[in-house]
Amino acid sequence: MSAKLLALLVQMTLATSVAVVFIAVVRKALRGLFGTLVSYWIWAAAPATAFAQLVSALLPVDSFPEVVRAQLALPLQSTLPTTISRASSLAGTYDDALLILLAWLAGAAAAMTLFVYRQRSFMKSLGQTHLDPNGMLRSDRVTTPMLVGAWRARILLPTNFESLYSNEDRILMLMHERAHREKGDALANAFAVGWLCIFWFNPLMYWALGRFRFDQELACDAWVLSRAPADKRRYADALLNAQLKSESVRLMTVGCHWKPNHPLKERIAMLNHASPTVSRRVGGAMLTIGLVAFSAFASFAGFAESPRTNQQIANGAPPEPKIAVDAQDMNTRDVLEMIARKGHQNVLVSDKVTGKITVHLKDVTPREALHIVALSQGLVATRDDNITIVDTAH
Image (cartoon, rainbow, N blue to C red; front, side, top):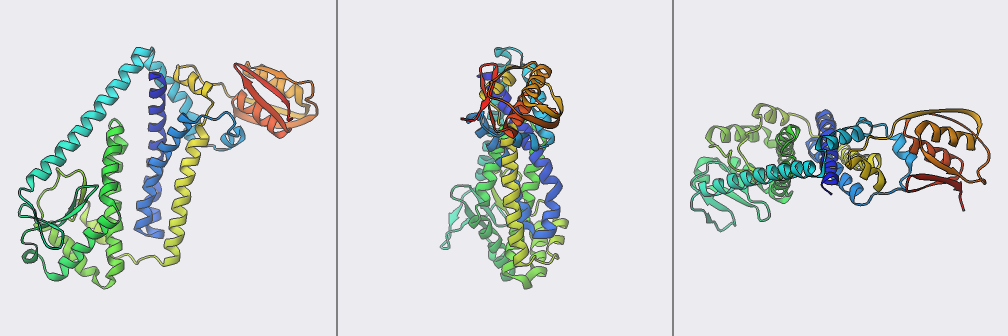
């Protein structure tokens, strides 16, 4: 069990790392073409790939079409089995795998403890807060508005909010924080922190968290300006004014705060970009949904293995070798025999299998080759223990 869990952890780490690299490549292009909201939504691809890996581990399927996995020529697909095998071989015995998992759990617990401590310390630093008639919290320890909490997020304002900022600035600031609350950004940030605790050992995730928060702020800025398009200059001034007045909120891990601790120059520069048209925003949303869905599908289909294959990988067994199959108008039985011989497979072919086939395959496992040949001839390849039985469809 420990070896299986370790293999799943490695598998999820690799899948999400590839997803983060993909997001890093496309996010700015998506932002330029379709707007900031699309570049924020694309971050859903990372948890989608991890969830797909979890589903493929919990619900392994022998019947998933091998030809689909063969067509998904993803770098991750070709490197994953070898990487998992090496990681498992490093684990060695059951005790080694258990020790590695315990170290991971200890790191995740330590990271979560640190984040909780920082959040609690921040809340204590606010001192005595009180609720005003509008349902917002007030504190004399802050100088900029912010959204605190996750499940029941509340807007927190400076006690002297009205004297610190002009009426126009206050309206824009409150629009910004209300947008965060209505869109569930505080809860999304809590989820992102939990995600980082799970993958605390992966440096890519620390970078991803910062970029995720930045794209979140840009999306919120764009939402505000879509409601007040004539106030771009005022909004930029409010950002700069808040930067000059604000104090450090580095301890807050869950919530959203007005202080533009993300690159202020880039954030203000984005205000000058023209908003995309409605049709472009709709197209971008559809493209994002498609990319996220494809990421999850590719992650699942590319690595959905049979329980036996997962067991071999988890136990540190070497992955199946890749072979090439080249046959021109050759008897199907002979092709199946050639695959079995090349891949050192135990194959039982029914007497009912007849006909000829032309096939050219390369860089496929023997099991994939057997299923592809069987599928193309209308045959059925089933696996019983370590024997593959090829017969006609009944």
